Image (cartoon, rainbow over all chains, first blue to last red; front, top):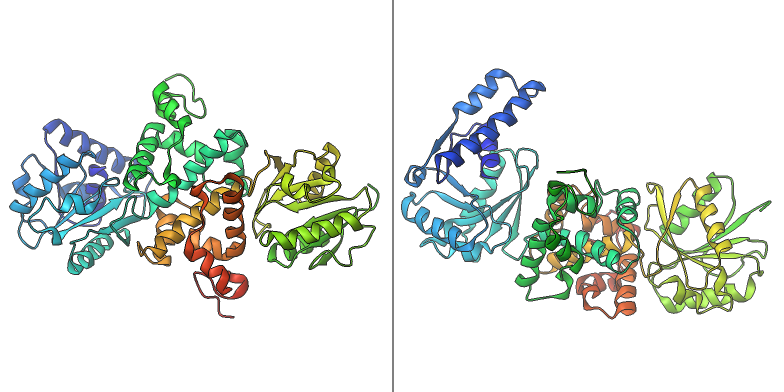
Length: 273
Length: 243
């Protein structure tokens, strides 16, 4: 997701530095951005000059120290708490006192990540949605010790990179992942009770509910494993509140390796992969 | 059926809309606040009450006593399964459940459920009523709120809890759900459109039927219904509508 965030930042006219731990990862990220921009040019959404200017604003580095002078650093490393805490400890020590530090976590408490820094008041959450170049929303998360000034700046910078920011308190799942749980979990309950079949539930949610996708189609797209992990994480974070209880159906699918579109089989089949 | 006439019972916007739509489609339709004054000629009665089960039970008992044997009774199963509703009457075979939320205009599909003792003829009759209104129908296993109202009520309940806990403001919660997961409406705005009393009825029905804590309504939702802040229809819900 880091590359997608770097792309929108560069597209919005900001000098952008993409950091990763190896040249291979940096190249991969840059490759994805290039491919995205190229498709945009081919479809006439951006001109060749714009594409060039965007890429010119984008630099890469393997040295964390180079981020020191940035206005804003957005961390989007894999969802491992120790790894994130370690990075914020380093960033806090390296960066100028004015630098705003943001985590793109979706499953951890911003407060738990921020407390690794000596100055947690300048740490906040900026939760982007996939794929960042296409999804307008950024949840801007106020940790327990995030300052009002940092929140204001986070909101401003999110607008600056062309997104619609929504401020929220640091609570499990923030707004979207928490509220949307019911869309998946209740559909799984209904399926589990044998009240209706997958295709019927999807159809009703689209044709009575006007949702753009049914819950099962969407889980197949997201990945059953990803969706199951998000539900489990929320369930634990709410100390096993039954509202968030994961579904044994979903667990079995993960065990079977039926993970949705990416494996060719989930709630629906998609042909051999 | 030669000349079908339909009697619609209820005070909600959904009842009003069903009445208007039936007329537009050339059905002989009448609208009634409760079970009084229903013509004995009504071949189909559509009863739309969701909240206040006691009141609903009175209406069903009266209809059961007054209506000719051949009439089919289509009843909202937002707050109680069709089997439960049918158990209040002497002729459970003619009771068919349906579950939908206002507005019906934009819905392509209506969910129907057969109570355990419903007859196939009654199901067919109920189906052809909705087909006559230009809707498709799907049959699902009986329960409170069936599918779409059940799932949406759970989403709304979670959004109301977030609001009450101060996670974010109503406008922010709604914007996040529209932009983050492409919902057609924010859940709180959606609740205002449906009517908070109908949403609460679904949750309370599920909680009562299953005994599961996951369906416990958010305290704020209950309080707003008690305060009479039901949404668009009453001029105030999570938002104000200048009435």
